Amino acid sequence: MPRTLSRRNILITGASTTAVAAAATLALVVPQSGPGTTAAAAAGSASAASATGLGDDRAQQDAAARENAGSAANRSEHRADLTAGAAQRSAAAEAAAAHRAHLTAEANAEARSEARAAARTAAAKASAAHRAHLAAKANQEAAARKAAARKAAAAHQAHLAAKANARAAAAKAAARKASRAAQQPVLNGSPQQMAQRIIGDSGQFQCFSHIVSHESSWNPGAVNAGSGAYGLVQALPGSKMASAGSDWRTNPATQIKWGLDYMNSRYGSPCGAWNFWQSHHWY
Image 1 (cartoon, rainbow, N blue to C red):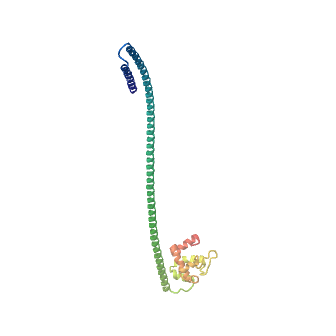
Image 2 (image 1 turned 180 degrees about the vertical axis):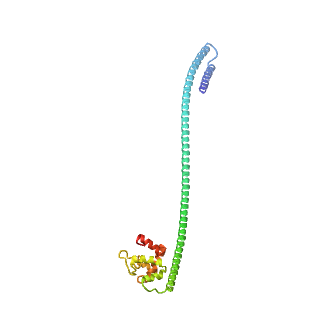
Image 3 (image 1 turned 90 degrees about the vertical axis):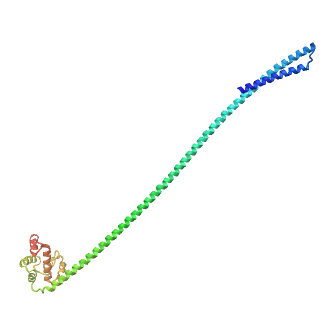
């Protein structure tokens, strides 16, 4: 590496400089004249050269050791860098995972909050709809009760009016009957004679007489043993004739009046009743 080579050059230069300095020092110390001096100088030079060679080897060894130490340090530093990079990547991955988990948790919390809000809104709408339904139902029931009350009141009024009309009609009928009774003379004689005077028309009387002769033989107290029909015209029940008079049980005139009214209202006349009787033997 560049940094290690630079250190090596510095070390070699330093060793050479040290050797030169040692030789110079030795030259100053040794005398400069005579053969001995020359020999000594030569010996010093040889010693200096030897020392210089040893210094170079030692410097090279030191430089190699330092280079190896530098390489080991570089490798350790590289490994440390790799480890630090891996740790940084791991930390970044953990941070990213934590951030994603945080975002997921926030999204879930927001979704739950929105779901709760939607549920509250739906519950409020359902409650409002239920209240509206109850109010509409109450209004309908109230309207139905009012309508029923009005209808009942109208029916009651109609019933009262009908009763009043019926009473008025009954009173008028009773008044007319009383008036007719007051105007009619007291009937005497046999039932046939009474019938002649009441009916007036001889032809209608003959038809009336045919029916009464077959039904009761002109007996005002005749009773049909099978049906319970009573009187000259065999009214069933006999109490029907009370509309013509309260003495319907004993008064032939009352029975004749009721029988004549019955034939006129049902068949148009006694002859109409006699025509029906001849075909059916009842009327």
